[in-house]
Amino acid sequence: MAFDFGEKHIGVAVGDLQLGLAHPLVTVSDVLTERRFDSIAKLIEEWQPVLLVVGLPTHADGTEHELTRLSQRFARRLEGRFGIKTALVDERYTSITASTALREAGIKGKKQKPLLDQVAAQQILQSYFDGHYALA
Image (cartoon, rainbow, N blue to C red; front, side):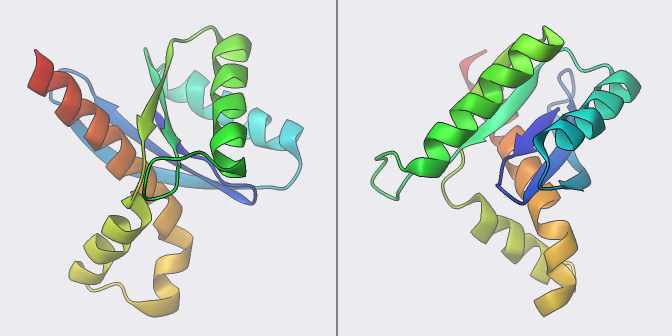
């Protein structure tokens, strides 16, 4: 299960480790941290993931910014709360590639907004799979 962390929205994707394929799932939209984690707990209970992947945003040159630190904290909280190994994956350009994928699927403009975060999470998870299997 993968997460595209944001302060307002968290995109969620699921995938299959054996197949190495990721799929968008849902966007968690809540400003209250506890309710966000309640929603995530329900997803984890339903999907039973063996690994959690969190996108790690940085500037284009790789330097960190505030959202980098917030994403790292989110990843630590996930692992601590659910006891599931959590990996961080470079997420530079995932929103751009997610938007491009949606546009190619015929979803344009404002219609992308509710799907963008979960498709970005899919891109993050697919990136993890691609890197993992490239090393195997």
